[in-house]
Image 1 (cartoon, helix red, strand yellow):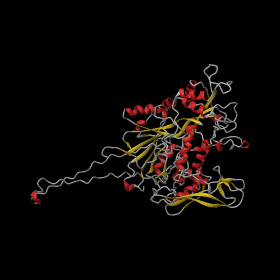
Image 2 (cartoon, rainbow, N blue to C red):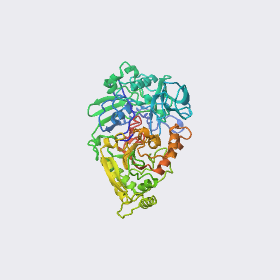
Image 3 (tube, one colour):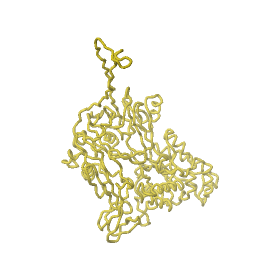
Image 4 (cartoon, one colour):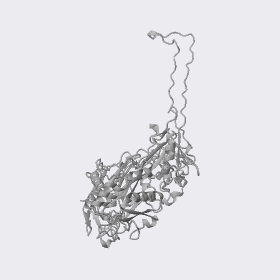
Length: 640
């Protein structure tokens, strides 16, 4: 669950043979003939003329081509839908395979689908079904298993049940999807069977990048020419069920090949068929991939795409500076621009050469408190007043301003403030050392010997803790600043920089998952559905014999709160749109903000840039790729 790399991206794909370039049609303005002077007189009488003069024809000036250049941080190894999953090929695939849906502003929206299914409309259903011994089900812990004696499941009424024998009833979720009237770039209509074919390829052992959604899928089938139905395993309540649809692959072209053959096929990896706005025109190894409009794009009648061509160039990032060759780019993607390059981008933006874009990146930095360590003589953070005091004593705003160049914001819970479910009334613990010191006094942690460090309740041990984190520049800065701030409140926090493998090793040996820390700085994912189970009692890692879930548990703080468990449990038992879904998630977020099993710091940011003439570019906190809408991208050229 912890973050050591970039977030996951959606896949996309392409065309069977290099498409011929199709220039965008240039709209022509009808010319208006200019009547001869005196050709008409008052009253409408036509004046005779001795000799008819030819009428001048005005020829409109053609609009200049719109050739947009996107600069990426590297060259795709492959454009195969289930091949290279890095950000660069994903960006190109968006132009070739229009995604069935997108994920903007902490929600989902249809793209290549006519709509997203939902329970209210009836195209998504939650039904009670009979489950027999030996059937595949999702157990109470969310794992795929067979129904045998001793397995704990949640029945159709939402009650936990330790299965013994016989037939039981469990909830089963299903959803219907209808694709837009898509057409492959060879003129063949896209069918529901193309999506089912893609599903079969995705779940094949011969596929290099396996789509794990299929393990929770009981059935995925075509129900019409453009309609498919997904059915989940009994017990699987997926809050993102409306995304359980597979991007089509051209079965009429690829079905004759085994899944393990597809990554090596030219027509799958380098020139795939496309149903999106563009097709591959030319791939110059080590330099660029040039796309041109797909003549069969289903929205071509709307004048889409706007561009004459879309070229992806490959540059090397400049870390703290703009990359060499950036002057040739209209769009600099977030995989190319390190966030430390923001001052250089801001300088270019001030000069009018670039437009800066920043947004949160779905990764939340925080400092976890060891509320209940697995092995420690003394726990300093069992009292919520101490955790609040530490938060009061930490100048998080200055920390965020320094590390995000003033673009970030201090968090108050485990989702960013722009999250759709963030409660407006979450508790705030602003920087206030006086208030922090007062809380520590109230908790009985006093400096009894005048050495500047508070003592424990027994006055025998100084309030000295370690702040463990991975050895990298970002976390080192966090640890050093927090340590300096806490000294003003009589807490000696010593930074301990640990190699990532040791810090995050499985328990009981690992520092974090073995619950062997006082304070630990690292990051969690922030997703569209808040991951409240990061802090439930049932997920505390520890020996099963002692009543814990085992060392794979993720609530590494050891914090336990009945009200939080109840709110999170209610949220996880509901689906978006059901009564109580939003209220339960917000209740859990409020309790976290009040009790602080961790001190939230800030959400990491993504940085991208464009030239001022780029139109319809959008960087979004929950859309992993900023190239999600290539059909809408445009250039503001003279006369357009």
